[in-house]
Figure 1 (cartoon, one colour):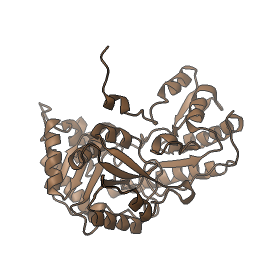
Figure 2 (tube, helix red, strand yellow; figure 1 turned 30 degrees about the vertical axis):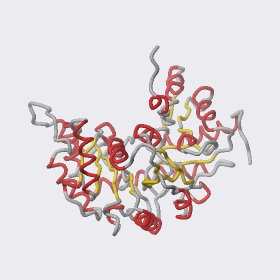
Figure 3 (cartoon, one colour; figure 1 turned 120 degrees about the vertical axis):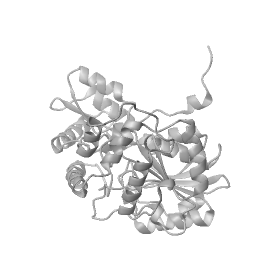
Figure 4 (cartoon, helix red, strand yellow; figure 1 turned 180 degrees about the vertical axis):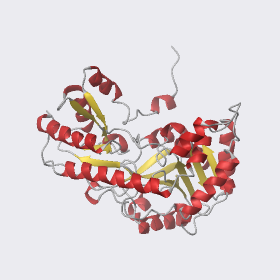
Length: 400
């Protein structure tokens, strides 16, 4: 029988989705599964976007330009201006989700065998994207003890080799929800300029911060116009995950031209979803104020509830809608599977993501789980009670 490729074999499973068969099995047994495993918000998509789909006036769903519709990109210029970023429409490329934007960035800026430094834990699909591009991730490890703050620049400098070509950050972060301090961002900007590296910034959670201030985009930092590449998406901002519309934004003309060649090879981003995304730009600021308030309420209920459980540690995230908790368990993969396969409380169980899958360093995250607080408050409170009850009887409990 023919063998599949080395690249096909190297593509990792998703720690977010790999437990789905066990969740399905629980549902077949009549158990209610509380899904805290995936960042799929239950927040309503803005009516402007939904109305644009319902009222679309097109006889043909034609190809869009490879870089995306000009009207949408002009609308994005105005959006970025509103968050302190000055770009032109020619510096924006519409992509099929933020995932494609990052793949384009990797393929445009890095050669096979090149290295990219990423603070861990990080969004697990970065592993898949790097395998796709044939590049190597070099992690620098953040710690739950200080809320997963950005590691010191000395750790980044120690990780740099002659194959290092880029640093990738996600701010606010997935899976930790960490919002990096402005001084830390400036330090990263100084480092990429000093070492002549690219800085990829995944900023898809920009709107979701809870201390009253929005993190600055790396595109607003002085002196790194040729280094900075922003990855963006409508998925989380407007609760439009299924639209699959993202953007690659850079002031580096060479990067943009290279990415455009990949964009032409895949033809075009989705036409119908761009119509909805363009309409979503009309969303009032009050929408985000209400969403932030709702997420903050959910965050506080989850974090405070978890920290009230003996030997559980859960830092308060400053952004996004994820929290990482350290539990008194032997192995997060085993615990998350056991919760679905062998445990229920009041007719329910909880699906979480083992945080081991968000690290590149083997052995890390074995006592950590990631939870997405994207469900109603009642479900979050029920999930906390269920986790507390599960920890009481889990066979692999390990108290410190």
